[in-house]
Image (cartoon, rainbow, N blue to C red; front, side, top):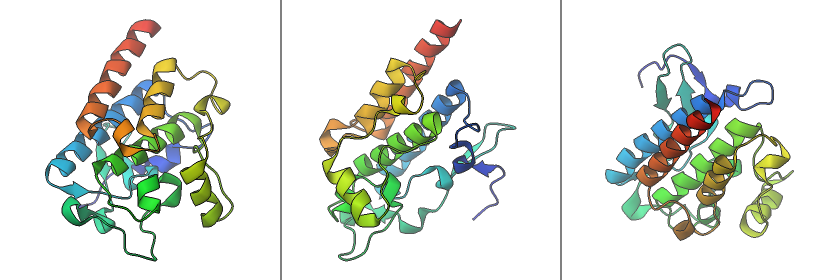
Length: 192
């Protein structure tokens, strides 16, 4: 792999180190664009998380890394008995070992957005079993618990991306990218 200059977004997912909202929205929209392209090529990443997105604050360049567990979407079942990916960011269908589609990457990108605007994730568990139970059965914690200043549009966007049922999420990564960009324009208007 080429050297990717920058730092993993995980460095910007901690309280006190969060990026400004306009930068986060631009990053998420660009990652969604990249995922839309991958999905159009029938590739599902399966491990989207801040640590697998390299961001260069100097020039805004973004690289998605670690396609090591990516699968051609025609045969995207998780191997029985093994969990591939990062559980905090995994979609419910991925945790259940069901067929993984682009909707799973959309879920993971929604959790990534949650992390980048709050410094937290929607679910916390002290064991994989506990975390899995929460993702499959509990409502996610409101992102406003961690950042009360998050605009309503961002809350709605996150909530749509992390729906438990894949068909209730954005129809595609391209649709998510469009929604993020529309929101960014609205937010910029309200600030000025």
